Length: 118
Length: 115
Image (cartoon, rainbow over all chains, first blue to last red; front, side, top):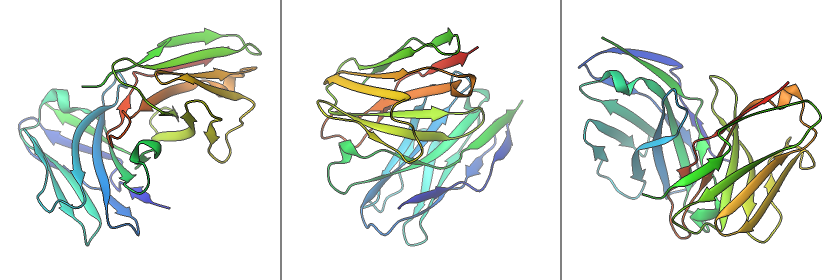
């Protein structure tokens, strides 16, 4: 079974600075999807960024980018120019591509609580 | 983007009563939906996989007779917490993927408080 590990329960960053959240995973599969979700105080899960394992290029979405190291099974999230609205829980998640992906749930890490200091 | 709704967003019930939570995919069809439970400051815990037209698949440790799941159509799954007790108080979240898509969309969640 796949597992996702987020080793940083809490992180803090000064506004406008850069922060990196760590995520490692364990799988025997060669193709899969990785995601970072943000959960603000409203508790609505918001997709931040996604990465297909077969793509070598790191995904980027505006101020958010990932460092995907497939051999090391590492998938870190970098937030640049941090804003107060970035304060939230961040979850790393894994999804298999085996069989019908629509029928497989996400495997979540335990999350990292990010605080942004004004 | 695809939208998933949940109703109600917040419910308070008395111990021993049953509560039904609805999860709807508003602009896509979903053969499969997922139900998660989240305790404060913790991650999402998968409870069950809801399959349209068939029985749900429950995760180990989840009581299927307490958490009844019905996926009656391609856009609606319901979770009924039967004979609720205070320990069932939690935040329940559903999610769904458009058929053929690997992306998963989440409902806004339902906060259940059992008194």
